[in-house]
Image (tube, rainbow, N blue to C red; front, side, top):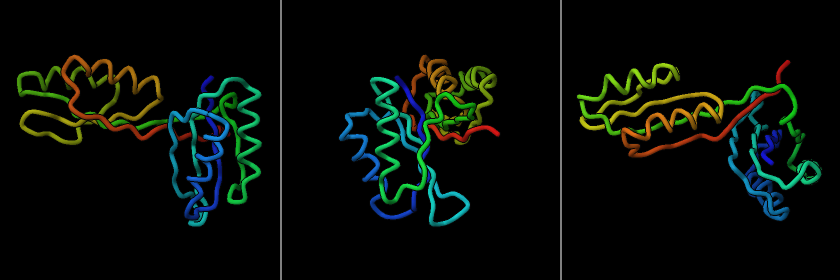
Length: 158
């Protein structure tokens, strides 16, 4: 069961390690973690996408994280109306003969070409986890040379 958990934490050394240790002790598989400073320099927001066995396990993880000293607030936003995004950079084989075809394929995804070399191009796409996966599948036949994904970040609506 895939859950999206957000945490406001103090921006201190070792906090990320402490969070992952709690998840590790509960044997929770982490799909992605995205961390960034918010409007206050001493506070960071973490977005954790984790796979848990059940809803009760997700509640236990949230409770355990809330007990940590450097944690301000933890919320499971999976069921709440929220916006989540991920960024992917994909380097694709792109000989000059196929570049216009690749551009046509990536256009519906609103992807941008961010680098062009003799034999490859790098494209950037932002969207939901599902959109990123679909984008990668469309590019796979051209030959993916390298790929980097940020992981999901999200905020509740309203």
